Image (cartoon, rainbow, N blue to C red; front, side, top):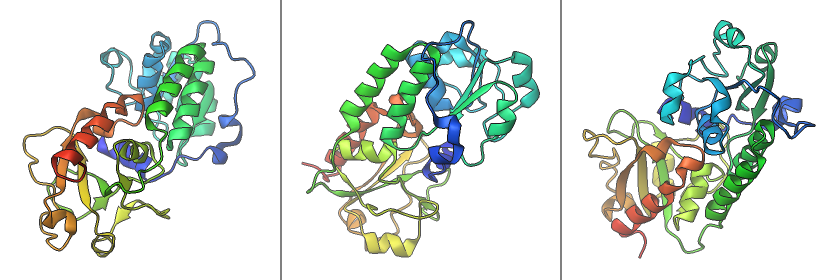
Length: 285
């Protein structure tokens, strides 16, 4: 997943209630005969392959690049900017994507049955994985995957765990814009499973962007910057904030991993990466 598409999720735009029937369970739990599936969300695409429904895909979104099989499929835009002509030519029987306030639901429904599923919190993602299983006739595999995700991530924040600010790394090594991970997101659950508390524990209205003044007020015990692997990004951008306890104690680190921007089952290895990094910088024993 790209940083841009991940930021769309971090903004909290997924909302089942806004889409009415698009979020209801289908009457028939079996996959339609000759299913021709279009996925317009990278994490849904990965999930479909994970549960064994990948062979039914006839097209994916522009952002889909995992697993390797998707590179051979047509890329037909996104749910916000779909390539209608390309999708229509493929005659899909089912189009799936994440529930997003800007998704072109009505236009997509004219091209085939469309399901927009909530994909923000751990509970939403687990429920939507199960729904994908029902839609594609892969319910047992989907139920098992959702159960594995919940078993690993559905934990309470440790009462005495370090207060960690988890942020998204950008193209530059500065902290001019601080985009943080919401506590109620999938990555918020990953942080809890890693043994930490979210430094921004309260509900935030609007974009999850932190001002420098608010950063100083929060004064986290540790700061972790999620980024894609790159040899050019040695710094985190927070080195200039000398008064922060995390900076003065040397508890700031960049976590470079491909799973950093995943927002589905592929995120599970990130738990150990965060836990190991927190131990490495002395935030956890």
